[in-house]
Image (cartoon, rainbow, N blue to C red; front, side, top):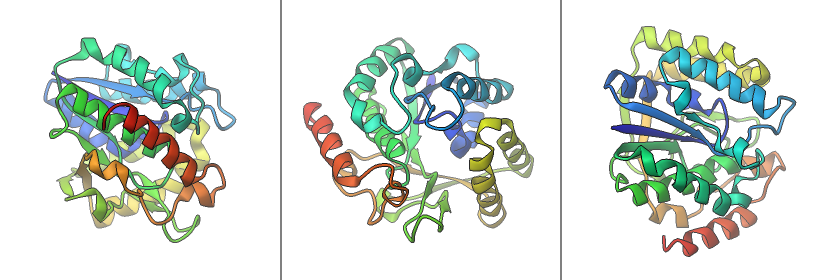
Length: 251
C-alpha cells in the first residue's frame, strides 16, 4: 500500500513527520510529492530539493519516492493557485501507478499561505479520485489570524472538522526538532517556526489531523489571510481560480 503526502514546498514535511514515520513503520510505501519549485527565496529549487531529500531519506523514505513535480513543471513558489490545471494533469499521471493508496495527507485549508491552501484543494480532489477521501487527512501548519506577527503553528481551525490527536513520543519529538537544522536555506523560516513547534510539543505534544472535505473548499478558509498581510497574494484571486478549477472537475 502507498501512503501519499502532498506538499506545496520543500520543508513543509516538518508539519507531518510523525505520520511519515508511522507510515514507514507500518511498512507502507511513502511517496512525497512537491507541487511548486520552492524557489521564491534566495535558494534554488535544486538546493531545496536536496535539503528535503537529505532529511526524508535519513528517516527511511526512498529517494525514488520523492517527486518534485513543481520543479519538473516549472510551477513557481507562490503561484500554485495560478497553475492548478498544469499541476493536476501531471499529478494524476504520477499517481496512477502508485495505487492502491491507503490515504493522502496534505495541507490544511487555513489561510496561511496561498500555496498551502491550493495544495489542500488539489489534495482533496485527488483523494476523491483515488477513492481514499475518507481515509485522508489535512494537517495545520501555520496561519496568523490576528496579524502577520501573531503566527500560530499547528493550530487546527474548527471549520475544518473534528481534530484527531496522536501522541508524539519524546524521542521522536527530539528527532523532529533536530531535523529543523537540516534546511540551511530556510534558516530564517526555521528560526520562526522552531520555537513555536517546540512550544506545541511541550504543551500539546500531538500530531493534529482533520478530515478532508470537498464542501469545505467552497467556503472561505479563514476570516483573515496571512498571505494578504504579507502582500504576496490576494484572496479574491485565490477564490476565483480555485472555484474555476473545482467547477471544471465537478467538485
